[in-house]
Length: 263
Ligand code: 6PG
Image 1 (cartoon, rainbow, N blue to C red):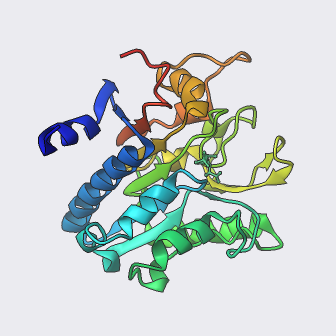
Image 2 (cartoon, rainbow, N blue to C red):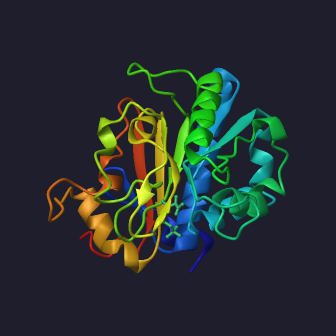
């Protein structure tokens, strides 16, 4: 197959409005990187900066590695980016479970983001509640507010668990839409631990939300989210609640995660 044929094979297919299916997880990371570079350039041109919130978990590792690699890292104006996190585990930044730690290893160690532009969620503080209050001050100092009074990020990267959670908004954990908080510290029953997370109104205040999802274990939840299939106990999965008030939401997924979305 010639190069054009190869490129065509990797090209994403819009299986549902805003749901782009790529053949592999690597192709999904490439598409996510392409969109991030494009949106970053628009934001820097318009406002001189790009306010980006990073996702945690393992899926974005491939994306961060790509952004740090030759061919991509030159396309990004790292000096004009501010990095935030969508959520964090209550561990030290060098702990293997740290979302900050993963991004630091795969991305920050390889690109020149000014350290004063790196806004880690200090979820390892003794008082998670106090750390959340401090993070709200960071958001207030750096971000404009949307029409609902919530801080407006340029882009929020998100993943999704097999149970349909996103950031640290888990099924059955209260009413995520009903909060006025910007950063919360929910007790996640199934994990037996607290997390620190941007709240749903902050995720929905973003200009762009990009879900990067891969793996067959996500297929059932992705179908439920995309097709808004109600949960047994009523309501929808947390990831389905992420619908920017005045922004764009896209899902970039691999074929395995999309296997229940009929073509
Ligand atoms: C976290 C993430 C979480 C993650 C999903 C998917 O801190 O765990 O923010 O929302 O995106 O759990 O994780 P994987 O990418 O590892 O499947």
